[in-house]
Figure 1 (tube, one colour):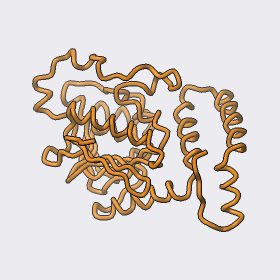
Figure 2: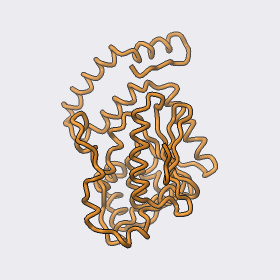
Figure 3: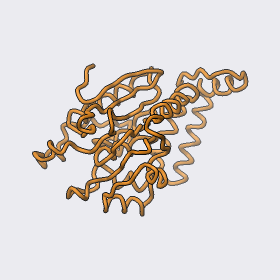
Figure 4: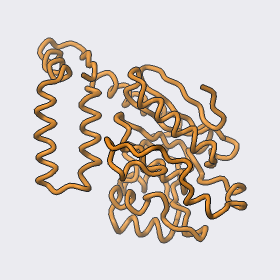
Length: 270
């Protein structure tokens, strides 16, 4: 399908979703919101896709909401529910919110943060499972300097990634921080020179799609995002059930076979 504010392509079993308003530093729009969700759903449903990369065109990842659109915002738009999908009884309610659907995608989502990452852009970056950044990327929550609050689950996701004290600092001050500091506090996993970011990111993702069981990745991702709502005992019981299922899977048999035969794996996700 055609898109207006994003680009979508699949190569080497990797779906790349690119925010594509480079002249506006990929400032977020309602069209972009709808298209990113559609592209994520498409990638999640495509058996030919094993991982997803989310990035931005040009010099920025996403500089936040388009300020020209915010000037005429109707407050009722914030609570409108026309964008929601029907409730899925097979998914945790927590991950069926407006932007909080990333954890329900059964494939790893890697944020390739090539520049400014602010406001709603930071929200989406933090919903990614792994974040790689250019060393000149700048990050800010932005909201308190716009008279706004920690929106779309940011006060839940941010402290789980960087800790309570760092989250309070970044949310209250909305100060800007560079990629090396972001890496030091755990906001991003790795930092690369701008001209090396894409190659390093795709090398990592290709290793996932070529050498890791897609079934294992889907289960492990679900375990990680279920854990904040579980006791240790509940988490352990779930792991025991999933381990038994793994032993019965084709991917487990292939995982042993390729190791013993010293050859590349041929995982099917079954």
